[in-house]
Image (cartoon, rainbow, N blue to C red):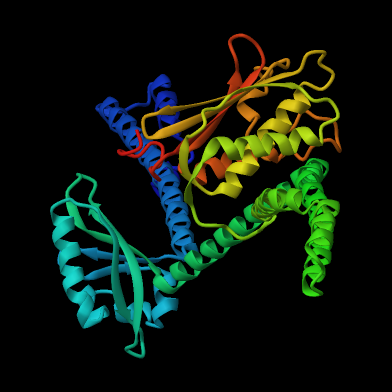
Length: 465
């Protein structure tokens, strides 16, 4: 003890040591042992009190830190937060609520939530409370708060129950986001989607132009044949016209029959009469062939999307194969197992481009092969038609198989390929309601199979299998 009789807080053993010294000198009065025991108890209680105080201060510091953390989180939230008790009175709001509505926190706390919303939102608040009492989650409900000027502020609200430490529901928590902000986000998403679609269309057109560049020689050859045929027939028709004109002029000047007969034989009028109609028909056929090629060319290169239609697939495949092979340096053997008639419902230009890409791809992988061979088969499978193009090249490495339809993926040297052909073809096949798959044939080489609908059904739908 100190001179004034107080216990020293920083010494738990000072009293015991002093009384032990007195007892050793034989100066301890009777009953002093009891006092020593009491002091022992007091020291123990005081030590526990000090420990409790230290622990309490630690917990208070932790509580203060947690309170500051929660406060900073609530202040940082961009979404509106409203906490209500079981009677619907507001217990807490965050800074986003105050900033959005312009209200002061002290004027809001304790007010019924229905007093802070517009009249048309009151039934929705009641529904939210009923759903929360039934322990159902409230999601994407639209309500309008009243701001300080009594103007509506529309929110998209999600809500859940608030529980106490024992798990009993004591209120509800509503989190909302201004609908204008959501609309702005949706608008930005829509613009991004349109930009992506435009970029995709540009990629398709770019690949078309790249493929067209490779096909120019073949297309020129395809056009040259009927044009040459038309030119030849027109020269013949010109000669025939001159002969017929000369003969008709002789008739007009009343030439005698003997001279007319000689002129008729000389000009070979009988032969001309027999030959002129087939010659005109052949010229028309050549002109129609030129028109067909030009239409295919326009369809292939145009940015405009033609409507889907039903058409015969084998002739289109044959045309696409001819276009590619005419411009190829090394022409492979073609095993054509196409039927005469096989109707599909799709965009002609897109299917033409897909076939061109697949044939060109087969030629590229067989470059340097001593016996290049391409097999083309077509068969019906329910409401769909499957067109398979198989090359006899080295096949696709297993490590490349998962990536063959990825944009810009290519195993060709830089400058020899864009890596877009298969990717564009894959997307166009899906746009037709079909699909394009690729892999290795069991007997060697790679095989790509294009599946197309016959009646417009999409692959994977209930009507489409």
